Image (cartoon, rainbow, N blue to C red; front, side, top):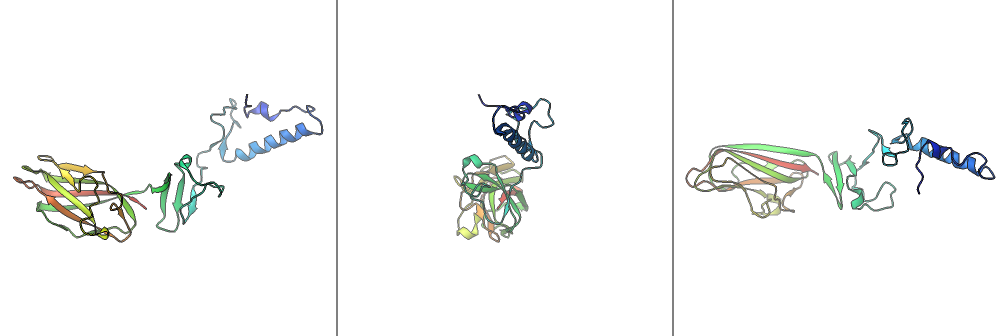
Length: 233
């Protein structure tokens, strides 16, 4: 049965239990380990109920330290063991490329900072490409969600809006299964999180083009608002 690291454990083996002062050395080592671990970890120290191995050795509040470097980490802090799914949740702050925070989701580092771009088109909707000037992103990002709202709902047919990644070539929709966000007949809102893996990744300085592929056949729909949500990095 494993021992519990508590106050009793620290005073064992008792003085005189083994020859050549071996018992003394064991107690010294145990005490030294406790003092060092307790600097940034929770142990039974100061807790009269101590010895709860399910709680011992957790990081104290504010003590966890993420990676702070300009290249994506590939190894655990020991610098020898490669990161695996067991490392999911580790944090890395990129201090050289935009000061971006990432979380590890094996096998990738995923940006956790989200930003939102909003714009609108007033008046009755018309089909066409590049219906407003292109949207330029100053930092590398990945589009994760697009929401659209029409103040006047379309009737007769649904309203469909597409966003194209210009750097990927003409017609490169950022959406996957359906190349559009749809606002249904007589509805005011629509959204999509179904992104195409390559086209939804936007490099710094690249741009998105807004295309209106379809409008209502009876009432086109009017006064459009669009919100684009991205993860940075």
